[in-house]
Image (cartoon, rainbow, N blue to C red; front, side, top):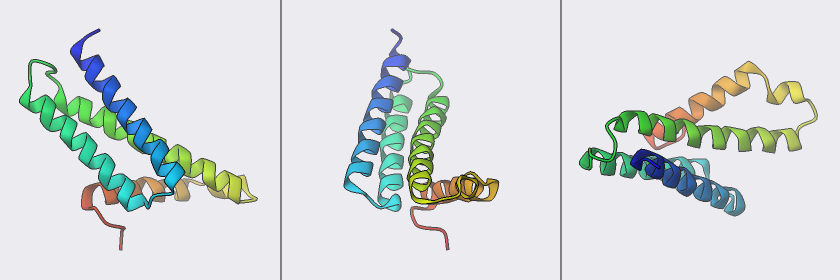
Length: 114
C-alpha cells in the first residue's frame, strides 16, 4: 500500500465516522460542514508539510471534499425521500443544484447562505 492510499483511506474513515455521528446526533448542517472542512484542512496541512508522503496534496483535498459532500447529499436525499410523497420533488434539478450550492457556501464561508 502506498502512503497516499493510507492517508486517503484513514481520512475517508474519519469523515465517514463523523458523518455517522452527524446523522445519529442530528447535528446542524453548519456545524457538520465546518467540522468536515477542519478535518480536510488538517489533512491538507499535514500532507503539505510532509511532501514525501504525497506529491498531489491538492488532489487529495479535492477527493476528500467530494467524498464528504457526496455523503452529505446522499443522506439528504434519503431523508427527503422518506418524508415527501413526490419523488420528483426530491430529485428535481433545482433542488439538487440548491443543495450543492448550500454545501459549497457553508464550506467556503462557514455560515448559511443569506
